[in-house]
Length: 280
Image 1 (cartoon, rainbow, N blue to C red):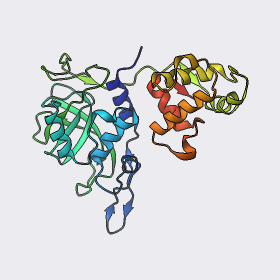
Image 2 (cartoon, rainbow, N blue to C red):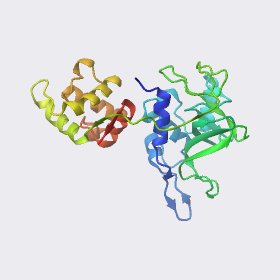
Image 3 (tube, one colour):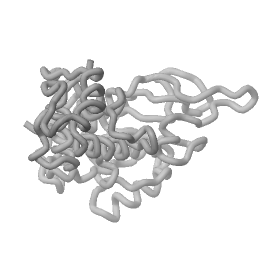
Image 4 (cartoon, one colour):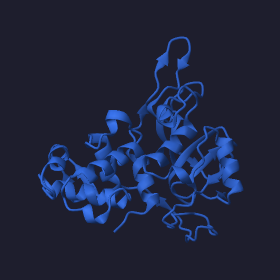
């Protein structure tokens, strides 16, 4: 069964460790330089909206949210595209303080909305309002600081859990939804075996498979990503599979020698998290 895209998104958001990501510069404060700014392509600036975009980008859904570092631009875009709501829904981008800050909705109940975001502060920390990391928070839904929500339309057509009684995406409103981990996948592949096969199989006779059991889940995932044709999903990590994996690496943001089709830990784990296998 294919995982709903909204669930893939929120699972990924929840996988990001909560900690400080910036560096303290004496006399200046936190420097706004993070892996999230680098991924977005504009580092050293306020990055709360960049973090939101990165989360969608990481799971291949960046096309459904505007690429902007401005919370106000995001809100205006949502209103212009019929994706603005006064109600929380899972995966929505919340506008705090009329453009002051944004985070992603990871849960809600009748009175509160639960969010997680970047360029924010750990609850209770005092830092003159300057964010420094990725943290989770809760706010009263009726708090004036909660301006509204961008509720993206997911390409698979599935509406996430929503509190909106008239959600235009077709979902039925629920009273509450709180994130909890999905059941662990039962399929596990060996990174070492997949790498070995990627180096061995292309030069071996057609159909040779050094580690078929480990490579087959990877090929099925590449097929699901529309990177590998079904007839080549056979457990042999041949040249076409190497090319497909290189395309996946580029989709993950790698280039040059880092996108040579030989799996690496980070890209394989990301592929597995989307398609139901773990990596050991």
